Structure formats: C-alpha cells, structure tokens
Length: 379
Image (cartoon, rainbow, N blue to C red; front, side, top):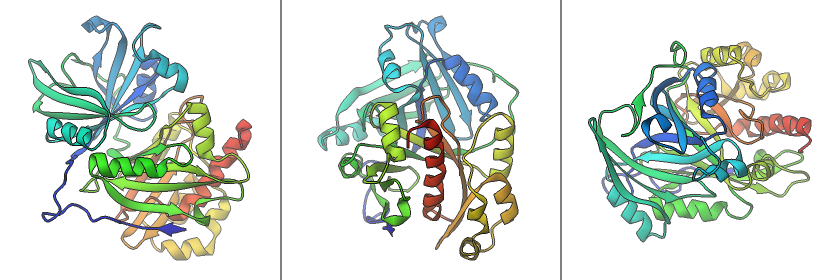
C-alpha cells in the first residue's frame, strides 16, 4: 500500500484558507418514508428528534424530520406525493444522502469562490428569516446528484431553519451513542476519483490528506483506490473511492450499480465509547459486519497495536477493528447497509490520537463486505 499523508499543508497564517469551512452542518437523506426513518434513527441510533416541517406548515411536497446526536445532525426527507420535486431521485437511488451541508462563516464569499473556480450552482445565496433570526445559504453541485449546501446560521436561534417547528423526541432520549460526523465517504465511477479530488482542491480549497493504493486495499477478488481530501483545519474530511481492476465485482462496483451512480457510501460517526455504542445499537437491531477470529488471533496484529483501552478479547467479542499509526490508535466497526439496497452504511469510530482511517484494517473490512456480497449474489 502507498499512503501519502498531508500532501498539502494544513492552513496556517502564512497560507490563508480560500474557502473556510467550520464543520459538517447536516446531512440530508432522501428516504422513502421519513416518519419511519425518523423512528429507526431514534430507536436504533439513539438520535433525538428536534424539528419537523411538512404539509402542516404549508410545505406541500415533503415531510422533513431533523434528528441530532451531539453535533451530528440528520435531516430525513420524504416526498408526500409522486410529483414532488426530486421524488424521482429516490426512485433512481433509493434511500441515500442528497446533501452534505457545510457550515461556513461567509456564504457569499464561499459561493463566489466556488463559481469562479468552475463550480456549478444549485442555489444562489438566499436568506430566510423568522422570529428566531436569519439563516443564509447557497448550494453547489458535487459528485453524482450530491450537493453541498453552504450555510451560516450564526444569526439564528431556532430549532433548525425558518419554517421548521420544534418537536419532542420520538422516544425517551438514550445515552448518546455518537457525538459528531467524523468523515463522509463518496464512491465515484472508474477513472473519475482524481477529477473529484481536483474539484475539491480547486473549487473548495481542500487539500490531500491521504492516499491509499496497492495490495493492502485489495483482496483476492476485488480492489479499489481511495484518496482523502480535507478542509484547512482537517475537521471536515471526505474520502473518495473508485473501483480498481479485480477478478470480480468490487464493493464500489456493487454500490454504483445499486445506487444508480456516484453517491455517499458511508458516514463515519465519532463515539467516545464504542463498546457502549455497539451494545446499545445491537440491542436495538443494528447489524454490524463480522470479522473472523483469525483477525484477532494474529500475533502480528497484537504486536502492531500494542496496548489499547479495550482488551483484545472484548474487541473480538464485538468484532471491533483496531489500528495504530504514528499518532495513536483507533477502534472502528461498520454496519451492514441500513436499507434494502446494498448502498449506504455507517461506521463507528473511536479515536485515541490517530488521524487515520484504519488502513491496517482495509483487507479485513473488504473481505467482510465481500462475504455479504456473496450472500446477496453480487460478488
């Protein structure tokens, strides 16, 4: 494997950030039934419903539920009639992420920079206001049918956006199972990864954080290539994957086929206690990928990872992956797809210094995904 870290430096006073981004503001999922999806993410993921907008508020096309866990915010949007604008998106792609919204300090400046650098506009800068204040936003196109809304809510105190009303949680709030969105992974077509890496460089001022190619990002049957772009502070990170030549259909090929094109493959959620999160989510019905015993019994793994906060036998019991780099270590686990199409899934990640993405676990992860592909008849 080749891994190149920080090909371009993080932003410093000497290298100003041309496209400042504070954080991932929210992820908008287009789903077939937003009410049921809101219940699932409340009960299975422990998120809390905080806001709603729909026909009752005069919005005739969609029902939208806003759920939070720490700084992570999901908007679940479902069309309420077949002619709703964008309803055909769900017919093509199934449940998936349509918008990776980014909190920015200056919507107009970010939007102007993006368009001057060749970005495509989806929404010109607009302000919306209610009794809680004003939100300014704009949007640009990204890979496939994905978009980035640029949003400044610094002058707003309402539950989400003007037009949304406060809603009580669907179930009694559970102990928080994750605190933030760690990174969002996109899958693109063969030969287009570098094109989208260059898009994030040119249009949004992101820099390369890591690159993964070679044997350790492949199995006996399939392979992929991956590069990670990040904003100046490294707080917002977007790995981008494309398929590579292999004997059989890779996980990226399967995603592109069933999603109907490029899109968000998985969302990594940062947790402070991966053991408690897995136990609670498993009890609520979330299914995680299984790693074979041989992974944990490998003496090279035990030598490489050293001492971590969770004994290896507890990691083995819950099938948690572990990796260490020069900065520290991380614990991670991946769910199975959370909808019938084998597309979007989630990662839970607990970091202890490590800034990486678990490169030592790629082979084990891909083999676990391939076992699921084979069961589906898609390998």
